[in-house]
Length: 390
Image (cartoon, rainbow, N blue to C red; front, side, top):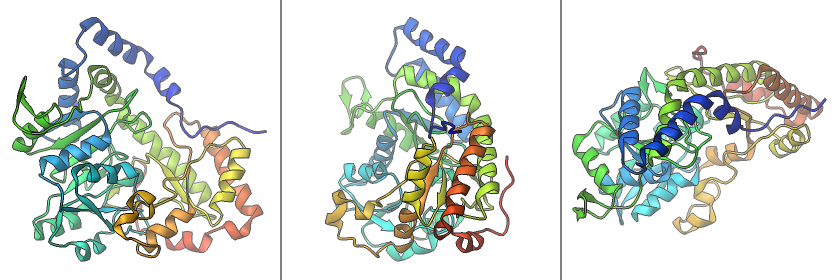
């Protein structure tokens, strides 16, 4: 029997909080206040408390959150920003929006995030900022990165688009660097019902600058102290996000339970996600490696299982960034991963029956196609101590 397992399902999320979300929407409609109002102020305060930071500034998207943070640091033409190529291209787009250039660092083969041991060799006189991308829900090794950044007097801006609620040694993603940039795209661990984003910081002066930059650079209405943009998180999305925020810990716990179930059923055949013992991974995505990724994806589609590839072409090999002069072989770990990775269905409302069906079909494919198995690789890609499910 074919069981339909979608890659994601926002409708079930809405249905799980229908009363709260409907109430939030109606409250905004009744208020007649839609931009830069009390809903945004309340959400920014609640989200700052959740993260354990002093300030949060809501904005229009995760891309613009990164841009605003970079702009607040004065990043511009002639500057370089260190970042990984294994990320959603919007991370890189935000750098380009400032006029600066991305300089790419390879990834750790176990966790898929920035390999901190390869950062220092990339630092030049042009380097202005380091952006660690907490990809798939797992954080970069922040102790080593912050130590290195301090040594070179470079600020750190965390890209937390896929890691809301993740922690490193007990500290929330977005609370360690000078800035954190969040995306509230609907499928995120905390998602709006449209686009949205936010910047977190503990720096008062930077916070005041961000508030101006997101609203045309205004210090007060019609008085423009700097060149800014229109990037505001509207009242409706702020209210919807606030209604969902209390559920994020439970949703992340369920994501970890699903991930544990997947890994228990698949680790003998494919490379499953590995969790740094210093981190709590929140599994925005559950990504495996297969030696026949394309064949597996086609097979799963025939069995009713939705999958995606995050991401098939790394940023340094994208046509848009060809002018930077990178070539195949420059980031070997990244390039190998992009040929093997496949994201399986992952959202909190997945049932155990659906997860077990996906496991069985992934197993069926690899047992029928032994050449696709990565058993030897899987056995080598293990940390000495993985975190328990939280």
